[in-house]
Amino acid sequence: MTDFGQFNTSYSALNTLFDKDLQGLFDQFEDNKLIVARRLSDGDHENPDSSYAGYPKGYGPFHQNVLLPAFIAAYTGQDASTMKITRNFLGDVVIKTIPRPNWRMTYSGLSKLGNLSDIFQNISITHGYQGKMVVNSFDTDRQYDAADPTKQKETNLDYYARFEIPDIQIDEQFSPLLGIDVRLKNSMSFKTEYKKSRQLRLELIGTGRLHESKGEEFTVNFGYTLKDAKLSLFKTKKKKKEDPKKDKNKPIIGGGRQGSRASQNTPGDMTFSFDMSVKDEVTNIRELVTGLVEPNRGARRVSIAPAVQYQLSDQLSLRFFLDYNKNTPKTSQGFPTTNIRSGVTVRFSL
Image (cartoon, rainbow, N blue to C red; front, top):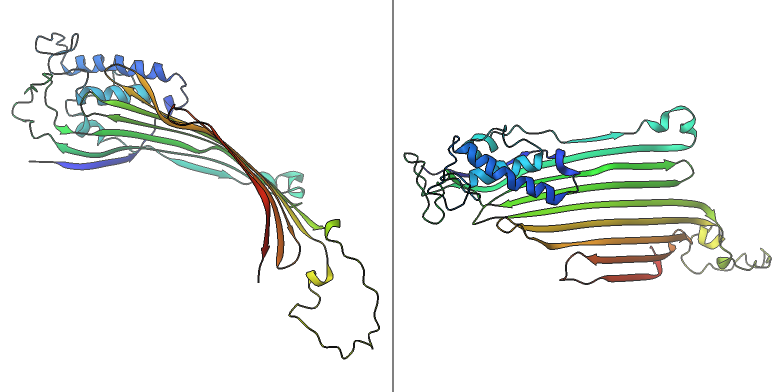
């Protein structure tokens, strides 16, 4: 009988998400492999038929049922010597994992407290977390024999596992870890967010590799609208009063509306905005055999975008803007770049 499928569940690895010692976590992963292998061998630490010194017969450091629990224990903060392990770890443990809660919370009651309601229109505080574990595919190993579970591979003398799994992945992110959105009654607004994310993908084919991706992002947004602002640049000379009897029968030429803001040259609204974001992300690949770390991709990106928009009339507006973007790659494959763009946008709406 052949079994195949995929697996996806909400998950949490918060115990190590904020751990900055990435090398220490990987070293713990390496130490866990020997602990798990010896537990699977039922205390038999002899290895006359093993290709790896120190490891018991049939359970080398790259055996699937050794890698999976060692990886999960290290990166979720569990003890490899006490966590549940079996010789069919995918079917008995991973697929039977109890879904972990994800959440998002928003509190908007601060603006209603005391005298704050006289100043603030709204104050929102947001916090959210999402995490999941993914096995994109699994399939029965056609060389596995349930009647002879100790059948060994010719290449490394490991026992065949019940399933073949290309990789397993743990994704989690605080989106945001903390977000504050403030709106005042004087048309001023302020918003800031801090986000944090991590992705771990363990390749189980061959000797295996571990992909570690970490990211942080900080954003600030500010806005303010100045009502009925007058700009001397757009002032016009006053026309002399004309005799209304003289122009009584004069035809009106053009399609403009009488009494519109454009014809009266009344003040317009001026809107100020400022957006800034700093995003830092990097992906490292760790070889399980050598332990070597190689940055695969990643960059630090800084973006600053101030702008001013003035409403000349109901149909015409001007926008002055500046966009600054700086990109600093984390690998030697790229090179730092800085782009600056500025100008004036004229918008006419019919």
